[in-house]
Image (cartoon, rainbow, N blue to C red; front, top):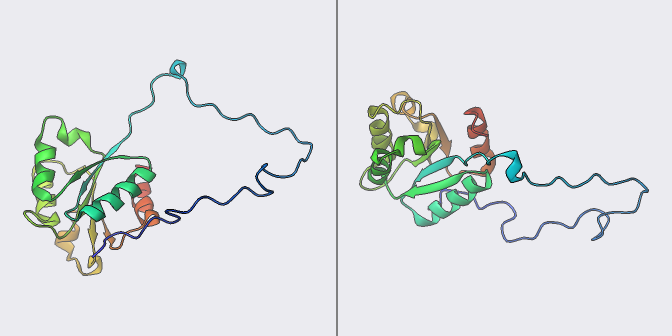
Length: 169
């Protein structure tokens, strides 16, 4: 079972600009100068925020990575809750991640057990967004562990909305 919808437009080239390949008809107006990327004189670019994706299905991991990267984040993957805990307990691990995208059902340690362990570590401010095919049936106690619960299949607009509400976008 796939947990994410395919990215919109995947594998298709973007549509040509209006007015043909030259970028439109000549209007006599002066086009604005292109914006140049920041230079070293502007100072270092801010570091990208990193999402920890906890998902046991490798295909779903890859799709989640594409979605998260498309929104401007770096990603690190864990195959189950046990690996998630190892990454968080490693030196600097708890400060390394801006948020966790957590599957509900996994072997070894599921998303509910892993999120309880994350909270028990004192990481109550670390956002954990759960993915569940049965999000509407999650009890209140379990729901309170998570920052948000998204339905599967998840898509970019739903994820973007959740991250915007967390002020991560």
